[in-house]
Length: 293
Image (cartoon, rainbow, N blue to C red; front, side, top):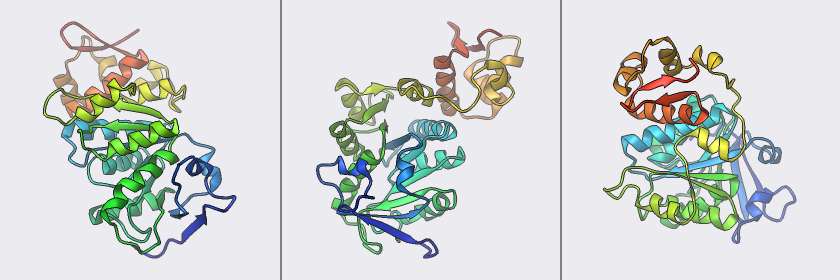
């Protein structure tokens, strides 16, 4: 990583050490960061972590991207671990939504792991985001540090969203830390079978809140989207709602995909959110139409 961004740090003994990290039973002795961060940043915007498997499916990728994108657009800071799979997708979704995202690294703050995400790390810094670590600036990544950094992800966040977690996913460590800290835990469900969601289902059975979109999360946290809520104002901004508003009859997922050029996975996630918001309905044939049209 380039050395043109100053490395800053604060000791656990300092009154400036983030109070949310002091909630941990084993807080880091020192927190290092690069980018736009100050203690006030932990008071203003809502902060939500999005984590999941490294071997994410296309379905999980679309969900993670959509949720991160929509939450970031609403002013929520998105936190993840810059790992392959769901983590990287969440950061990209937040950046695409013109939002702020923070990454917690398993190595020193002057390194990027994995190296494939160097460009994401640079974009995070260039768009007022931040990189965090509990390790000295040039420290390499060792196996035990991946699990250890998950507790910091959970502590920095007000809530944690799990997307596609198999039984042995590292995301379950983040979920466990979130529960111990009293953070709200959300889980995105997925197809039964194949094992990709076994860990997710276990969390839901244990009491985690099931969500399918950013709208669900915002509703449960009593947060408001920055964008106007009225269907008329949204129709002029969103291609899905615009297509439904101008069609004389309900549209299937395939037809909407052709009109909007969005993939079926992205469309499904978006439509689920619009249904929760009361903007869209689905008929018995699986076609969609705009309510109060």
